Length: 309
Image 1 (cartoon, rainbow, N blue to C red):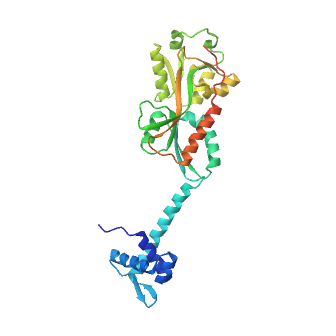
Image 2: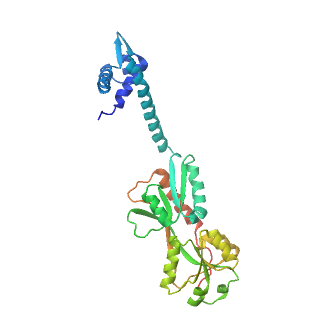
Image 3: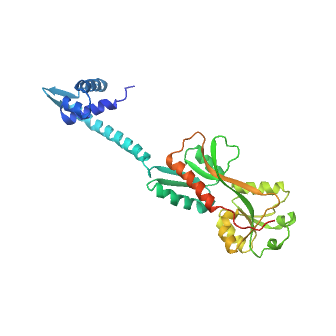
């Protein structure tokens, strides 16, 4: 296998071809004339061809030298572009940010976070991959995303989880729903009700199913939807009871179009945060994004007024 070309020798050759003089090439590169001469000799031995002819004080390219110069200049340009690209990444406001997020966080959290993020990193290229918990874990492990806003993953030792906030899943019903006036909800009443739940393949659906199974409540009527907005609309018209976190229905709770009720005496809580591969050092843009997520969720997610048990 032939050796890889030495970039220092390429620089010396390009400078010599441009200036036509060992003396001037040496001055341009802040080297000695002997160093330039040695570099050219080593390059000629490496490529197996004479690249320059010395005619007195002048240096002329041979036919091989003229052909090789085109390749050398192209290589040096690519090297300069590579360096410039890396320099750009270190400048404030440049770079890329690959995010994973559930549809819920895409709708209720990301817009505010990214609006503030773009003020600090206006030229940062942002890519968002929507998907639920398991999909986000796969994207992180495959290095397809850098960060994921997600529920705390159970038993994933290869991920680092930075907590953001904790919420509580509760029943969400229309104001005229019988449960609003009920003194307490019985197992029989919950089992007989149609529950409007989010995405059967989601981690949240599994949490809800596990909760009611532990409470010995059989869910006989379930409507599964992939949109929080669709769930809210069905609940508003009285087609069942949703199971949602109050921050997702904040506006509806404040205007009275929906009411939030506890699932039972035992609360069903979830932990949200930002995950990344363990051992991975976060770039400046990524650290800034995590900090903004922490700030935004602190102000956006204080629990609104809800109906107690």
